[in-house]
Image (cartoon, rainbow, N blue to C red; front, side, top):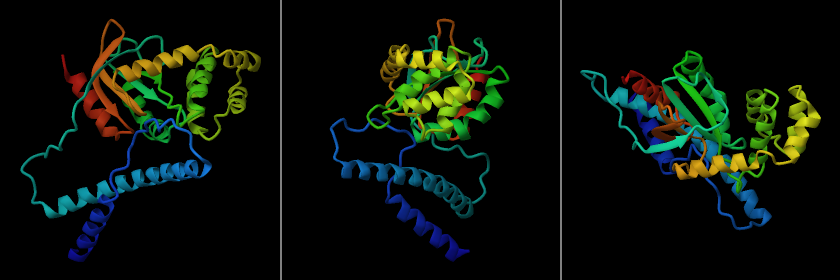
Length: 270
């Protein structure tokens, strides 16, 4: 066991030197790039995703080593808490799940082309929806935050989701866009609309008119004003009568427990 622990500690030290890959995406520099540099940037992004997965595995190993090396605690240990950043945002007339009068509201800022956003939608949101939204405890509001410099298709995808919403299919389109994140070119958006059974001419006209371009831009502007710098980001707070939410800003594809702890804390307040 001593040899095994030593090897794991060595692995921890080696991986620590690689730094901590981000779990949220931020805009890239706006200057033009030559093809070779663009390819290098794409390779770097893939490496960041792989490192993010490795970091999760490393965290589990680290916790195991701590349990093996530490004497039994006399009570539940309290993990160090990250800085609690306050933010205030409006919910506005944006797509939402759950009861409008739910005691807690979560406002999500997201980008349809962001791999971390996809990870959250696929792996974490279903559990939160089942435990809190469907039970009437949380209202979940979606707001767009397209990172144009690194995700050129995200903005039009956000408009497509809203055009689908005119025909009562916002959330089905939302899910398809994240599931088919590699297929967000404008002609592919029309294919998704047809697959969902939408009125194709009506959807195409809506998308071509850029009807929701200003709405998407306002979402981005509001998010930036609230302190959002990357995606996904979330403001978790008590529901207020004036359609604003004042609460904690969580940045990145955070673990399920981070959301549970914050939501449960708010639900316990009178």
